[in-house]
Length: 110
Image (cartoon, rainbow, N blue to C red; front, side, top):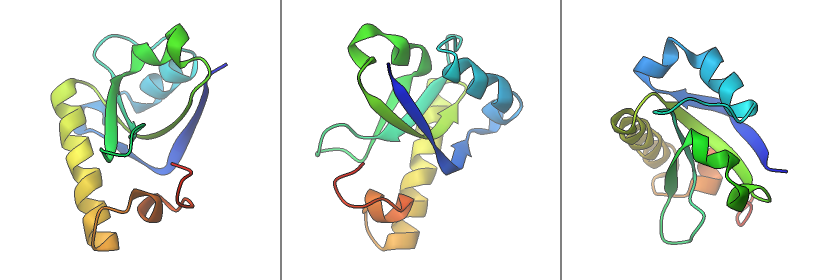
């Protein structure tokens, strides 16, 4: 069963703010509608963040995965904006691109 956790300071796109509760409940129930995106720490070591259509999180290939959702958005372009905001905030807080430091996780647990 897929495990989802939520960033304490969840980033929410402007359009997504209006339906934030509905989006979060849809993701929790694996019933998010089309057009909803989530931003998570990258799976590989080459990137900082990944952007997924929320509906793909319920696919069988992700059943054993753990996801930390850092942000939600109402469309792909908004997801890019939210990801940009996360990267910008991370740079200002850490002086670099240290995602584990920024989100308060031990290195290697992202």
